[in-house]
Length: 377
Image (cartoon, rainbow, N blue to C red; front, side, top):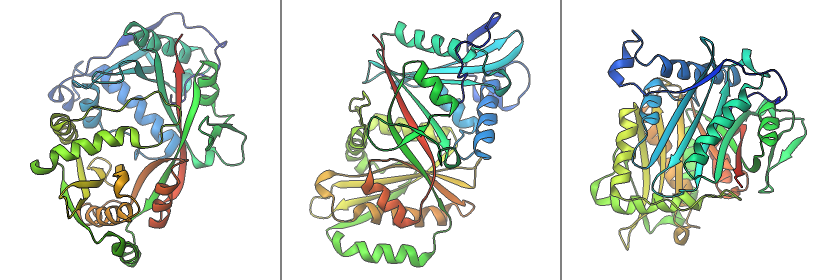
């Protein structure tokens, strides 16, 4: 929920139209000419403006190719995007995502209002619209996310997360909006940034400290697509990852992953212009893949790398595999994407083990992301 209208009593919304946005073909939007994709470009422009206003950069913002690929949806998730106008003027957007293979009771909700049109009740109108879409599809558990920069969380009173770890500023407009709409702050994640390049001696030291505990493992890796002989076990690890991270009270079931789903995710990233570097650990005696970590890079935002999943299977923890695979993947990333100047990552505040690994690598706090949930009656 990104900066909606915090005041449900302010103004009216006569003349407001909310229309579904058709995702255009890549060829139709690439030229930027004509009406093809105009609504989609409006939505993307709203997101870009919001990210620049809040963060001063586009490190967290999907590129246009990424957005085109994402909003097309797939057999695992429906994704619906809506554009709001007052007359001919664009004032905001909302979206609904609907898992299709599991978590049939859930829906993801997002609302964004243009700054000039806040405090007019528009945010609540768009939220009502998105929630109605979810209800009509039989969804009873809604989730939403909202991130604030570190500067917005210092020295202010916080709404504590139900997880017991962290909170968000009570004076943040989106916090007041979510609470008024019946959403509960289940969990807070810390976003952290690592400046690049990491000095080689830091990586060398961390690797040397960890290696003796991991003599029974070898480190491997790949770019973009998983080798076929590892895909089946990689899918199993991704399934584990879906519920292995701390979930607090979020109403989320284990995802169902197989080879086809791995391939679909990889190809979607490639179609969206995303490059990936994966480093994994293999148990020598069994030949099984037991840990992995992923970094993503976009040519459209060359300064920034996004840290994605990191998982070590529970029975293989305590061998320092987490730090080893992260060190190895940072080396791969720095060599492959020399223009990158930082890595962004997110961790639940209660995930102290992974936070400790990131701190050792040099990550510094950058902001807080609230994970909200509303259960429908």
